Length: 153
Image (cartoon, rainbow, N blue to C red; front, side):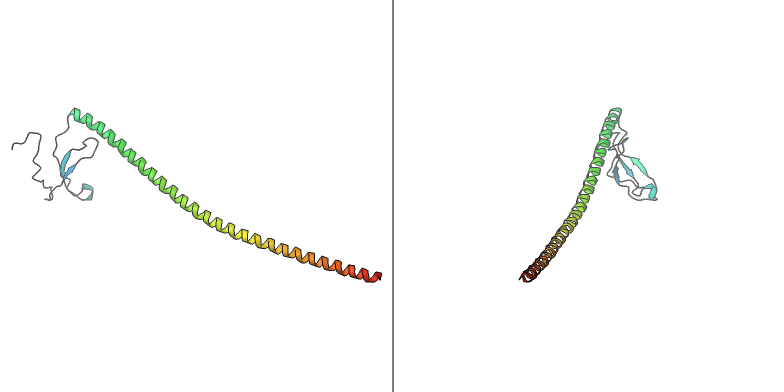
């Protein structure tokens, strides 16, 4: 089988400068989306050798324009994902605030019940005090009436 001049045999893996097998990767950059390459498996910033070789040819102008559109769509998609992530976080924050408010409401309801019970107790004590005062006044009136009656006789 004969390969075209733009294709590369990818059945044979490349070796990097450290004699390690290079994995076949796919570019996700806006300028080369979907373009395949071999590269050192260790990133250069982590001490890799920096070996790199494109497998796919540079895209034509049409493909480049298509790639720009695709790139623009990828950016929009990423923005949509970011918006979705922000909305998910906002929802999580709102749910957490709701849970906090529900706990506060539950605590407030408990305090309200306790205050109502205390108010009821105070009202009962007040009524008892009024009844005692009324009995005392009635007793005094009876004593005065009896004394007045005996003074008349």
